[in-house]
View (cartoon, rainbow, N blue to C red):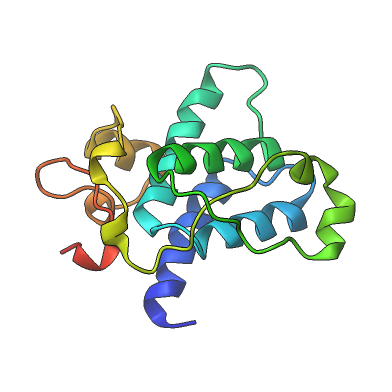
Length: 156
């Protein structure tokens, strides 16, 4: 894993750890999150997690674990609606989490972020709100005009 990938993973782990989002099945959550990280642009994942945290504040108790990460995935599917299958889950996780198999887990591995239509990424979050909620620098998620950055390599 190169240094930028490690930094990106640490950013996501910071959000997950800060809000204790893994739930009871840490292994299944981590595997699902890794699959998302290998499929979607980093800024979209951070934004989807943050948006789901906000939605979670509206429900008591806040959903965590696989329910949470599946909602993040749904957010990502709305923003990038290209149907292709994700790689299958390892058999150890399939036996632990049959709920994942009941849903249709579809999407595409992003090798060319130009395929992602930035107009589909709708958020009411401002860069300042993102920073307040996550404790992270928003410049890897939002550009100087407050628009969502699809390709993290284009960030300053």
